[in-house]
Length: 105
Image 1 (cartoon, rainbow, N blue to C red):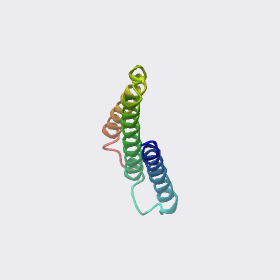
Image 2 (cartoon, rainbow, N blue to C red):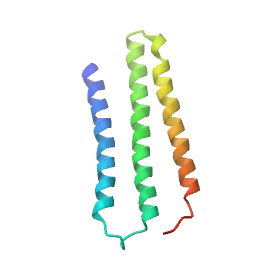
Image 3 (cartoon, rainbow, N blue to C red):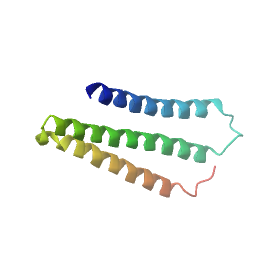
């Protein structure tokens, strides 16, 4: 079970790093006339923050499963903190998208 949890953790972290790398490579490889900079930045930020939020929620769920198997119910405030942090990150992403919805270059 420990190996499965570690492999899921590694997969989620590698997925977040891949999304960040894809966004950065697209930002530096595209020409300036090709697309609106603001919409491109919004799309990259949305994809990356979404991936990070998914990674955080999966990490919290894995911690809950691990703590329940080890009967460490006193440590459940760590995954709850991670869940609150990821929900705050999603709310901040929503505010960012709402505040930048009408911007044009």
